[in-house]
Image (cartoon, rainbow, N blue to C red; front, side, top):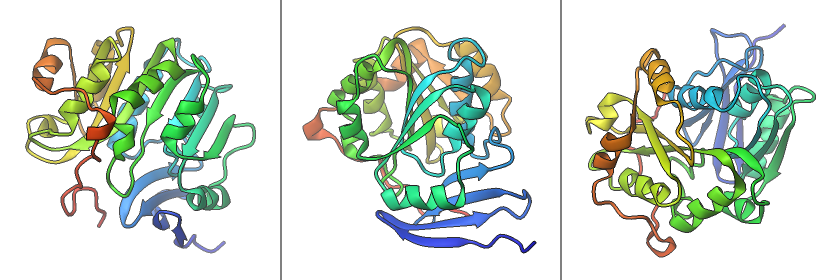
Length: 281
């Protein structure tokens, strides 16, 4: 059997490349315009290669009883890493994946097919438009991992968007977002203020070096109306190969400072990462 070879394709929003991992037999890295987007191991869907996906996974593992099926909405599809993870760890879950790049969805479906009966529905649509049309109280978890290139689109950062996300979630639901910023956190702090104006509980998971302003990086936002188990999350995040901190309560309020919620008319994309921030060798 011949070794797998990279796949290159022009999609709606850029140039996507699937590259096989030489160390794992059926594992693939997806990049778009050179920026890593997803890593998938078809034989081991619970393997989460990227640090931020593991942090999202820690929160997902803590929602409700272990193994209980959930209704999830994923804004941003990539190579469907987290939907595959949930299908494996919580069989019977119903998942909707909303991806604006239809040709990317086609590429992933062709080369990295989902297992039969995974319970994952794919939708080619704009994330905010899809959420605005979704029914009230229809999801247990909403995950926003949407990047136009390497930036979170402006229309997914505003107070109006946060209110739509809250409407779609059930009373005990959890909103998760993968964000990226660096000091002085002119994007991240207003995002926390925005979701803090809608949800009663907030937490932020990030590497200490990012939180201290030493470098650009990812931060996972957790928003809900009920407290999450921050002690358990802190233990798992701290024991990761790339340890992270969980900020919440007074420390997080101090981090937000005087930042104000973002209105639609004032919304801007997340900052462009510096050269090499998310690159690959």
